[in-house]
Length: 259
Image (tube, rainbow, N blue to C red):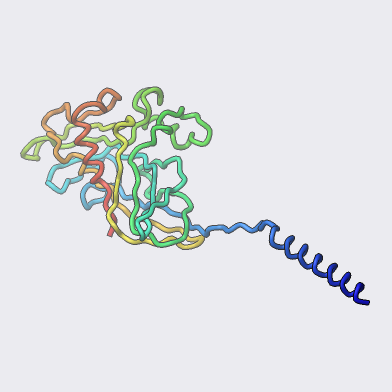
């Protein structure tokens, strides 16, 4: 009888141990999905506090100088959200083209949460800047001939910011307007934008907006307008001129949160 009890006790222990071991070593097949919401930039094209309603309209700059705009668009890439603790979330994106005709620009789906700021670059990353406009997945972004630095996209690359029109260049600000054209590009002129702190939140399955103005008149700060050579940057060679360093610094000032 004792032998039988011992035998059954041994079988019970072996079965229990095997069951426990199997349970402990079974890998989990569950994966966690981070909830997301869609992020969009809402960007107005402005001259000072006034929005540009249409191309070719004469407008007054904050300093009283008259200007009219014929083209105003730019690329935005390398977009990062700044979390409340200062860490960064990089949005998976090839980049976006902000055109005058559309104020809303879709950035992509980002994790739900609270953020205190955004960072991005005006222009395209060096990798994207080297692509042909027919590259799969990039056609809509790059096949825009007005954003090429020459008659073909390569080898000169893309225009990061295209701003043109006419402006009064006289010191009295009472003269006839003169044509200007800025096509800023090349990898050396990819410009980092750091927006100041302004909290915003992203909610699950909800479109969240960051509202900003692009005050293009700021591009002329520190530019001697009476020198016609300062009004035209249109080629890859032009983008190496000293005047472009001033234009790059001014690009950093273009973006302002909309109240």
